[in-house]
Length: 98
Image 1 (tube, one colour):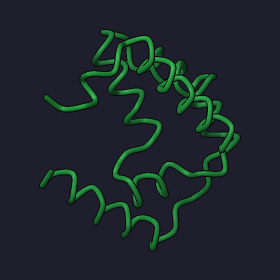
Image 2 (spheres, helix red, strand yellow):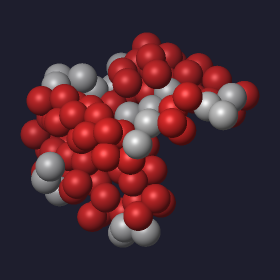
Image 3 (cartoon, rainbow, N blue to C red):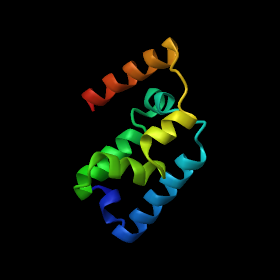
């Protein structure tokens, strides 16, 4: 059994909410950089929460971003550089192998 499965749902949910709030606070951490480093971003989290709870995509994104995605994007998302895109592509390729 994976040790993560031994964590009770209330504890896991509290940790997840803390992660989401941390990402909301760190709006300087661009999704493309998160993807390039860790292979997931806020959009991935919203997709996962949507799949787990049968939420519509926009409702899940609003839950993760704390506002409609289009609003967050307009206020916080910067144009990705070629280097950021290259790192993201390399990282996403690792996801396919995992």
